[in-house]
Image 1: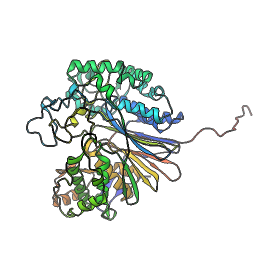
Image 2: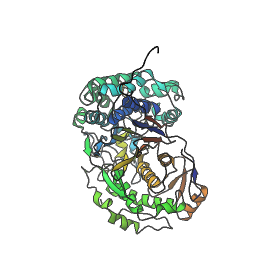
Image 3: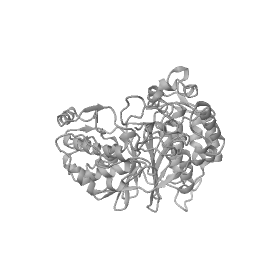
Image 4: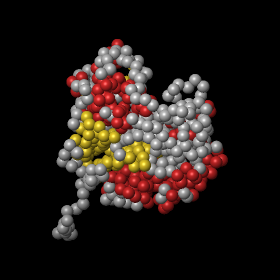
Length: 560
């Protein structure tokens, strides 16, 4: 059983949730109905990929503020043969977008992508070409065992008959209410009579249920070359958006190989560019490997100071050299090398905070979702998906019942930069669907939402597991910190005494209720069982499958 965690600094946190265990499979997502959808596929004899796709479609219904079929994401798939691959279904810049399509707000900072009229943030002009639906359908065909129609049934059911809103959904609607109220179709569902849905009230999405039924019959072609795509393109044409039929026909998913890091005898596998996460997690682990982190203790000022300096180094390099590798040269080999880590480590002052510049040449949303699934055959899926900001573009496409992404807010409206708008360019992301192996055996698979706070939080979870010896439940729930060079965000569970010591070292400490979102994952044990864990920062729920079918040859007598 998970106990209160006590550090050498006196830091105490208590896990709010319990793990689930299973021997035949595990599904963990940030909504109980979505986890149940995946578990249903495992119970029916499906594999982890079947479970993952069923979970993702259901999340589009029960976490509509986070994920949708007109969105994007990254899936880390480990097959039973031990091979790993990343399926990149990230959104791309529409082909009709010109480099000067948006005007940057006067006075915007270097890393702030605000535009005049918020055109890249809210409304049709903020929508990027969708990748999620195509990636999910292709992944199911290649690696799953069940039909698309079968894995979509739970999502269709919940969309058609409704489900009770959680307090978390109510809070998200409330946070976005001002923008949602400007669009009648989306306000009709989430702001009935002008007020946010209350916890327990039913969320019914009848129009979206019809869209899902069409996809179940026709597959992704319904959107990329069929009637659903016609509705999307017509809406964009009428409302000044950029997506055309050419974007839908042109869009391709990309299979990529993982970034691999070694850390204290562990193999860590993460996403490659255009994701920034795998590269910089490897970089930070390489730097940290030169310190005895275990003896420093979890949550001490000494440890948090070191984490902060390492994060600032990573973000300085990320700003200089992250992006779509089809458009810029990302120096992966240098950033992930042990020699480069030695060079950067040598400049860290163990007693004083510093400002860091990039050592190589050359804005993300916190509203995302993550799920993790595994089966008894050895297949594992960790995937992070999003429509970018909370409720994406804050509009709903009539005739589809779909909330589209606002991915264009992740591109720099100013030409000539690594993240500048260019037709066909893929989104750069911090998504971190991670897996950790020991002597070739998978031990952990996990991930989380949280924008630019994702990969620093995933990095800290690895440190918690490997250096501090936490259980998976403790690692996903432990207090986190984050900085990219300015204020150091420190979750409230870290004691005032530690925050005071950090201020003495020169950090601008900012207490934070949460750093990033609901992490979830799976631990694989030597005896073939697995544990699922989800943290308090979202509606995360693990569901494990155990037991099995009746023993062969069993007969039941009647009336004896």
